[in-house]
Amino acid sequence: MAALPAQTFTGSPLCRLSDVASRFRATSRPDAEVSLVVVAGREVVVRAPAGVVGGGGQLELQALLLRQDDPELRLGEGDTEEQISLEWVAEDGAPPRALPLYLLGQDACARWTFALDVSAARDAFLAFLRHACELEVAMKDVRLLLPGLSLDAAAIAGQAVALSQWHQTHGFCQRCGAATLPVEAGTRRRCVGPSPHKLYPRTDPVVIALVESPDGARALLGRSAKSTPGMYTCLSGFIDQCEGIEEAVRREIMEEARIAVSDVAILGTQPWPTSCELMIGCVARATSYEVLLNASEMEDVQWYDRAELAAAVQAYDSHLPLQEIQRRTWKDLGFFVPPPFAIAHHLMRAWALSPRPAGESFFARQAMLPTLLPDAAPTGGATGGGGSANGAAAAAAVAGSSEDAAAAGPGPTGVRAAL
Ligand SMILES: [Zn+2]
Image (cartoon, rainbow, N blue to C red; front, side):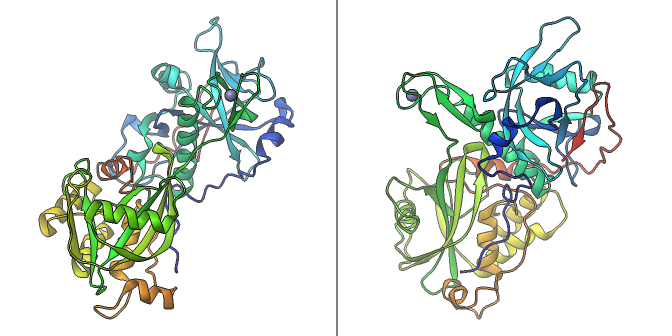
């Protein structure tokens, strides 16, 4: 079965081998070149001339490069080799504040890249960047930045948000109830109980499936009450314990639409950082037609023919802002689908646009001709998410800034590069 194009939030340029934390700890601190990605909850700091994010085009993460002689930002001196923080002197003479650092990996220039979590001082740190560092920056929900972030930047930002959120929500050990602390340069946590337990960052698997009708002519799409008005997407749901991917697809489709599914194949995957999910994109063949809606889960589920879906997918080939594309498509077709930074979009694109005779099964043809998927690269990344509301976030996404932030040179504290 052919693969989908590389999905948004994948393809990080950082080296993430499991020994990266021990290699950092073996590095002499004064020699360490450190780059920081600033996050607070789901938000990341990006370059934003005049504080405006919008208008289409490419956005860049605003990374901070630590300088050895920086009086305001330095690696925490009191840290152990396992626990590391950034000491920030917000005002002259004030005691430094310790902000947590979580190691993401090492970039191609051998710089250690960390997520800097400023949740405890979001507004103050943003003001510091703008005034003390003279940076034109904004802090935005990573989902709203997706149309404008490059694949590399989205992958790094996504990892930073996911890891920071994991740390924030795992302050206690699920085995003994004791408090936990970051270890291994913030790549793990360990509890302080009498028998220390190690905690690893979590990812929850979610299946999302393009279900084609028994005659291969139509695809099953639906929407929940939480979906953005007008948007229909592939059906999805969390994988249950001790359940295979194929079984989860069959169960979810049966639960949500009372449609029976036979064959299931995986086409690709997409991590979704704000809810720490891994979307597993599948194509499946239905063995029945009649939809019986499960109103407790879905607001509507319908079959769409290939021409309708092709038109909805190809609407995104325009250079118009996302919201305008969605508004026009909804008006013209009566629905719209998730944008190209969602794996759901690429499942639909593959099914609707792959060359095959009318009525021929996409599933069967892909099994025989695995290279015929249309080559459409994503431009960012949301999805009709399983247990989360990320589909709604995708549809609400704004376009990125087209303005060049190159004029934002180093500030007084010596910062700073864009990713
Ligand atoms: Zn424990």
